Every structure is written in structure tokens, then in C-alpha cells.
Length: 136
Image 1: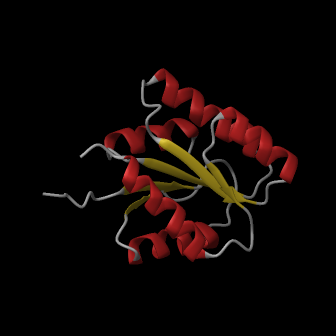
Image 2: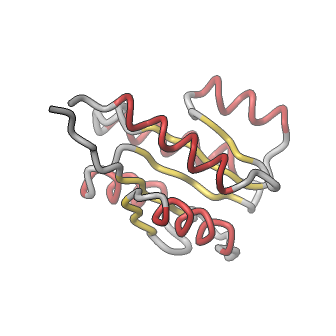
Image 3: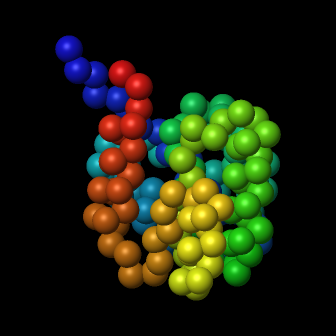
């Protein structure tokens, strides 16, 4: 018997960035595709984001960062997940992030970065690949 696992993703807007339209569009697209989405709202600290992911038993954290602080914010989220022994939570994100920084973020442990212009279909399809990595 196969189980269809419910996938739970925390979508967060860390830092001082006040533009959340993209995060809301992605959250809605994921919900429409059957993913459980916990949207943390604006101005969350990395600590709040990680705490929400652990409390909600999320499989992934999606960060939307347009403020230019992506290197610091992604790094802190990854450090906190390691400190909390929660490195099984996949971290991905999107925003205005230069190509050279995307490579550095991926080397740091960020699973995927979506840049402006990425279709919600591409994001949903990628997030759905996380279902296959869950234990049955």
C-alpha cells in the first residue's frame, strides 16, 4: 500500500524586506498543488523561521529575499537547522539573487534558488520532487 505523503513547506520572508507578493504567489501555487503551506508573514528572523519549520514538522523552508541580505539570511537559517539537528529540512528560496551568489548558496547547502521570472509551475514541480525523498 502506498501512502501519499502530505508535504509541508514553510514559506518565509526573513529580514526587513517588505515585499511579499512573490512569496504569496508561490504559497498559493503550492497550496493549489496540494502542498500544505505555512506562511510566516513579513519580517521574520531566521530563528523564527527555523522554529516554525520544526514546530510544523515541515519538510522544507522556502525563503523569499529581495533585500540583498540573502547570503547572511540563508547562512543563518542553515546554521540554525544544524544546531537544532534538523538538517533533513530542505532549504530553497527565491528573489533577486546574482548568479555568482546562487553558486555560493548552493555550495553552502541551499537546495535550489528560483530567480525572478521562474514560473510557479517550475517551483511546484521542483517542490513536488521532495515527496519522493520522504520515508514511507
